Image (cartoon, rainbow, N blue to C red; front, side, top):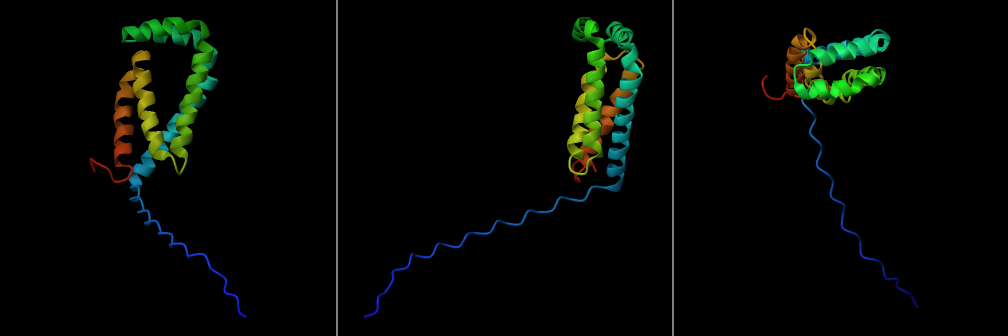
Length: 153
């Protein structure tokens, strides 16, 4: 006598995921500009950590007196007593942006972070610094938009 063993029904085949389309190549000029911005942020972080940190209180007082938006003056007035922490934190933020800009996987995020950083800090910095920051913000945003073949070619 032969026994037949009942078999479980076969599972339906697992559908394969559609292939992920490759990102458009990053134009050479955008890649170069991104790396240059990364080197610039490294230099800014080092300069603030080595140079500005030693003179943090007078520097922040100068920024407070030259800030061109009233809310920034009020905030900077409260930050003067902890000026070394503010300058040190700024250097750490610049180093973080530089890390993104110089990485291979997060450069686009680094460009947007650089844009936000420069736009956010510009009203707190007295002239002549913010004269240079406005074109920088435009440059970083433009590079970010063109990073993956975006708008404004």
